[in-house]
Length: 217
Image (cartoon, rainbow, N blue to C red):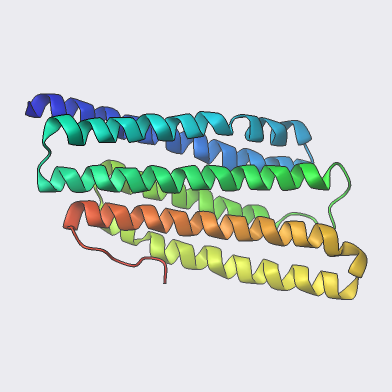
């Protein structure tokens, strides 16, 4: 019985890693589509969202099967509960990638009101957070999970800088307001991705220690 449970749990972890890879790719591509004004890339991100959603459903079913048939111990049950929440955070990050891609489509092929330098840097920080969160999950690494709090502070710092710059641009020239709002939304979506990564970190801590820690302060 235990051997079967361990095999199923390894399959669960593998599927979560695969789902995280898809989410990472979607975020990276959505930012690339905005930076390069490549609407085809943006449309592919929107079209591929169903793949991420299907992964979430498949993993949910596997978690339910594990609970229903394998009689997990308390520590194992925490891992299953944490897995439910981790895939929920990943799915929401996938949705945010779609939201960024849709913004790219709405802006269209017109020139951007400013070169995208700081925003892709902020996105890279958030993407690195995804890698760190998933690595912490794979290795059951509590300290690595806790390191996400400091990484999130850096994302928040960049968000505030970009928010201020875009608001200043729109205040000086009202004709920039529409695209400025779209870019503000994009930075907000990236900031939210960072928050979801800290949520994953919190689940890793809970999974290993059985306590809740707030990493998004």
